[in-house]
Image 1 (cartoon, helix red, strand yellow):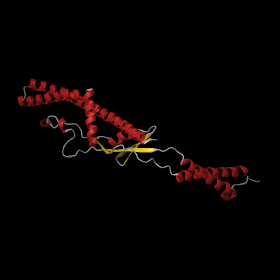
Image 2 (tube, helix red, strand yellow):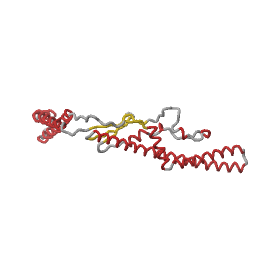
Image 3 (cartoon, rainbow, N blue to C red):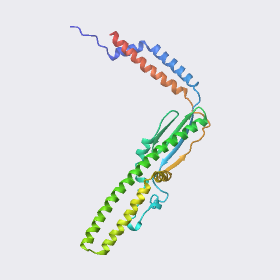
Image 4 (spheres, rainbow, N blue to C red):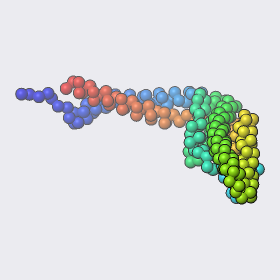
Length: 262
């Protein structure tokens, strides 16, 4: 019983050798045409904005927003430091890419690039993309503060309720008046904190808190510049990519033709 003829690797290599002239010529001609066409492309200018997010303050011993520290004698309640924020996740979620611009996050730096056919257009695109990334970051920061303030408000509300219940029990049992006085002072401070938390949760106060956080954490390293020279289109690179792509698909075509012939 005769089986079907097998196609070996040697057969495929022989097929390539038989077709080497049009494979080589086709790749070279296509590469030359693509490289020449790349020189006819319109100029493309690039403007870049570079910034980083820093949670560290200039003086590491000072806490974030030190003017907002409340009641130091009652435990030094204050807001969390920005270094504790998930900035890396927020930045990655806030990166935007669109027509004429893109953004990338690498090694702690955010690079926002704008592209245009004129220097002014590229700079305008870079500024628009930068503002878009900042806007998305601010929304993340605002949502964080809103959730944090609501969570603290709920905890304090429950604490006030428990302390008031404890004060009623102590009053009935006629315990140490000084203890009741200290607990009453604690309740008053917590109620004051609750009123301030409600004030912080108003829209204007939340926006101001988010702006203050962004101003203290975002460090602009390179503002958008007006480019003087357009970015170059390397014809050799374009031509090499076109030639390699042609050789890949042409070789695949030769292999498939040899298989079908067999």
